[in-house]
Every structure is written in C-alpha cells, then in structure tokens.
Image 1 (cartoon, helix red, strand yellow):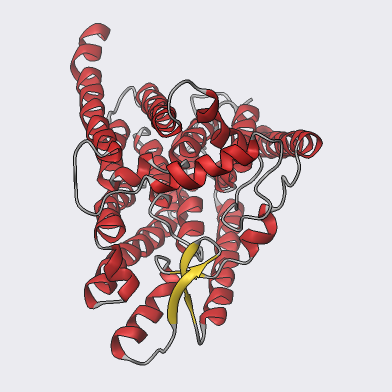
Image 2: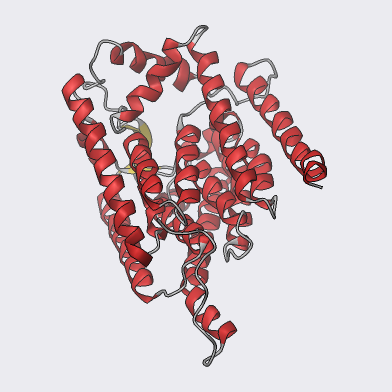
Length: 412
C-alpha cells in the first residue's frame, strides 16, 4: 500500500516539480526567450562581484547594496567554489534547495499533498526571479525550522538562528513556538546562541561583517511596498510631485511625505509585534498546525509592513503557506491560496511590466495595487483566523469537555 501511495501521488508531485523547474531554468538561462524576463544580472554581476570581494576575507563594506547578515556571505561564495560558471552553479544550488524544500513538505504532509502541490505550482508563477535571487535557499531553512517547531524546539531554534544570519526574517517562525514545557524558551535560547556563534566566527575571521546594519537602516519606501501605494495614487492624480530613483540598492520614492510614510510603516511593524505578543498570551491551543499558522502570520505581517516588498519576498510567504497546508488542522487554507494568487501578480509587476511601475502609469499602479492589497487582505485574514483558534477550540470542546490532548509530537 505504501508503495502504491509513493508511485501514485508522490511521483506526480515530483513530475510536476521537474517540469516547472526545467521551465524556470530555461528561461533564466535565456534558452527560452521570453520578453522582459532577463533578471540574471543580479547573480552574474552583483552576486559574483560580492563573491570576488568575499573570497579576500572581507565583506563589501563600500557597497550600499550589501544589506545581509554575515552567513549570507557563505551562500554567495559557494557557487564560486564549485566547478563551472558562477551563474550555472548558483542555479544548481537554488535547485537543490528547492528540491530539499519539496522533500520536507512531502514528508511532513503524509496525509495531504496540498502543501507540496502549492510549492510545486506557485513557485514557478513568480517567474525566473525566484531562481536568480538567494531567497529560496533561505526559505528552505525557514521551512525546516517551522516543521521542527512542534517536536524539536532546540533544533528549530538552531535552524531559525542560521536563517536569521542569512536574511534575518526566518527568526519570525519562532512566533509559533509552544510555551509548553518551556519549549519556546529552548527554541529562542538555541536561536540566540546560534546567532552569537555565527557572529563571533564572522568577526574573528573576516572584516566588515556587520557593515550591513548601517545600509539596511537607511532604506526608504521602495516602489513595490504597501507604503508606496499612496504615492502611486498621488502621481496618477497629479497630487504628489515626487520622483523615483535608485536609493540604497533599490528603486524608491523620494519626495514629500516619504519620510513620514517610512515612520508609519515602522509603527505598523511595532503594532504587528504587539499583536503577536497579545495572541501568545491569549492563546491556549498549541498543535503542529498552531505553530505553522503563527509562523506564517508573523512573516506575513512583517512583510506587508516592511518598507520593501521585493518580488522574491513572496517566496518566503509561499514557503510558510506550504508548511501550513501540510497540517490538516491548519486555519490558513484560504490565506495560503491567496498567497498563491499573489505569485502571478508579482510576476506581472516584475519583470514583465516593471517599466510601467517606474513610470507610475495607470497600468503599473493597478498591478502593484492588486498584488499589495491582496497581501494586505491575506495578512488581515491570517490575524483573524489565528486569533480565533482558541475560541473555536473552546466551542468544539464545549464548556464541560476535557482539556485538549497534547499534540502527537513530543516537545523536547
């Protein structure tokens, strides 16, 4: 019977994955010509340039586009150490991480293939950008950390710490760590120890490992972020007289009220943090689904309130959504499919109609509004459904029912 399951559903999943990734790679390599989809310059020029600097034992301290924690340097260097061209080896590295993510999702969702299928189908809808940035390997680490949360809290903390040292955001998955038996304490302690160890090694063996902190803090309102929408509307109607320009490695809005919007987005991020703290204090239901749902909600909240929502950020959300769908009890199914719908919208706004966004045309404004407002709606729905987890559990049990059973996975 097990073999029958493997040869029917699992083989179909891997076949779908292979077809989708072959299409992605052929477009990324330029073998299949699709207009406006040449997005390989970040790898061929920027990443490879960083790698040449990193191999000398120093970080790109004079490059404001370097805005990543120290472990990201190792990820950027790795293709340089492999045989073959840097770009091809980078694609190989991303494909290996992509396959590893799917394998974990299949193992976690033995009773359901929904999470695996979302990963198979939605990732290619982002277009070749997803294979020409290093966010997919980081997402793979975050997926592993989230899946480890219900039963292996220390291991989850280590993985979240490694992810944080790659691109900060994976630490957010620990929002779902259960307080039972001090599991959350162990997860956060393991995360902090891992981060400290990586920082110590980076500081002792390289130069400029923490230069990224100053560059990241200087970011403004990037033209794909939710905070950019009022400036699009103001530009279309003629009520706002600012401009778009390259600023700290990305196209940002510059002009009246931009600084105020930046502070507003930071304030919304702080409110998101307060919501998650209040939910943790309020919630009494902790299962594998709770851990995944909280992790996705945390990442989604901090993404929509960020001053930057680059196209590759959507892969973070797809990874979290796929993990949620591996748990039958998840409350995030509608949120997950909303995020899957955001993938093709992201491909349309970048790279297909990127020029329309830069010109702040009606088409560009419409595309980025559709994508960002869909993400905002998904975040709001995620908050509501996460908050209601405890109330719905109480309703199912009834006032005289016994307390909920512990999750099947043992929290260590």
